Image (cartoon, rainbow, N blue to C red; front, side, top):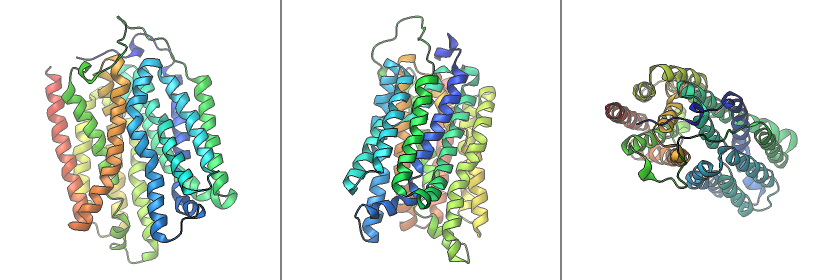
Length: 404
């Protein structure tokens, strides 16, 4: 059973809103990720000394935002279902602008970690934008619209660290935080004054509460949530071992960090380039085709990554893997959107966001354990097996869903 989107009743503003959400997501992701290059330096400025302590507190501070964001994502999705998706974007951008600027005013590590926790609770702009676009874009163009939005999100993730490496030497770390807050504030103003949400027009009043029991095809939804988790595991599993792995491949150890950064960026760049195109293909050929193909192709590309002999080979393979996976989340989001009732779409997409955060945590843990206990090459082979099993599972569940 499939449900009509709000846009299939009346929504003349979906393209206009997509542009605003694309800018807002791009800007907020730049602001949230520019912290990466100078985070340990700021932790040290806040009074933490010793390499081990600095590394530990840097990890705590960075992960704090994603911890609280993952916990509250379903709540914000549910409130968006009840009170409108624009209100959630306005709330997120305002909250993130304030907390980001205040981070530049922190005087102790506890204040900084507390503000990082608050940023996760208050944030969620990009996930809220996904829900807004998914609920408004026509069915025939939903994956393309979500793919375009995903490209903006991933581009923000790419550019943010670059900006974070440039501005602190010029204006200082604290002013960089305030500048990031100002950038998010611009996204807040654009969202407040430019996003337009039409009143819902449905054939019967929406229930005031949404429950998991309202979803007719629970196995399909569970599969989509698991697929989002797998995507994050695939991208993040190499994080703990990548520097050591690159070090074993290249002759000049001074190039290790540069090659590692290029490897990590290559997959994201590939996804930026392919997300919109694969979304358009999915709208024509079917979302399930792209989901299964993306998982299967990425699984195959992970195998040679375990046996590369040079850094450039790994960069090329990660780029190709990013191209393959670029359309995955837009298609997962589209499948969820078209298979849940209107009053439950926000909360289910909120669960999808939480599943991705789980993958961001589980991926590095899994990669670190396998790399340390079995060997670094088995990180790639183990991730390959997980994606292959995910492709088979999706093929099975999606095939059964078509027969219903």
